[in-house]
Image 1 (cartoon, rainbow, N blue to C red):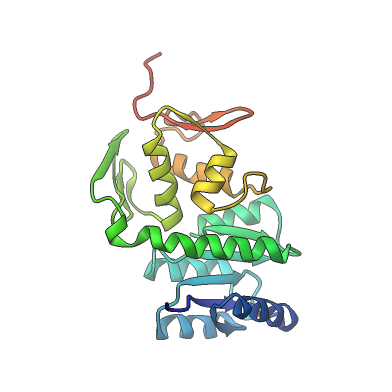
Image 2: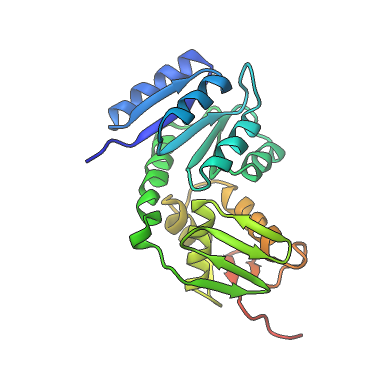
Length: 236
């Protein structure tokens, strides 16, 4: 079985060495870059299965680096690691196309769990396992096979995790999904994991597909429980 290939972009030597040791112990093949320029060179030279990306690099902004990689490979899993832990930093990273976010310092066990979950979801994306039909609602047409969406605001290239979340919502139209259910089915995380990633993804889906993201009609918050997708909202 082929070893997953991970590109680690981290300029702090002691952090990088620790991550490389533990990732290789898990059976992953690691390419390490300390700068954005080196990361892009490795990225362009061959296929990688995942990118672990620090935002604060000596020669570039990790947000822009993520954006450039995402243009080339829309479905590539990207995990951001950074000392910038404010909400606005998390939102900026996710808006650039990252799939998940861990602020330093972080638990090694949680880090490895998220890496495993993101790589496991690559199996879901294989063409033989992805449905071919388009899903239509609210003036949008979503192609889950190719992870593309045509919306009233224009075309959107979806990430693999956005496609996974949409699939879960579409398969459970009208049903309330708890945070635990979504974290497990989309990210492969334990239901009690503390993370704002889920909420930030909901914000992104509302931005893509809601007529007014501040007054959602399709991706609804069920306070104290989770979220609910409604394809055809009831007329008030």
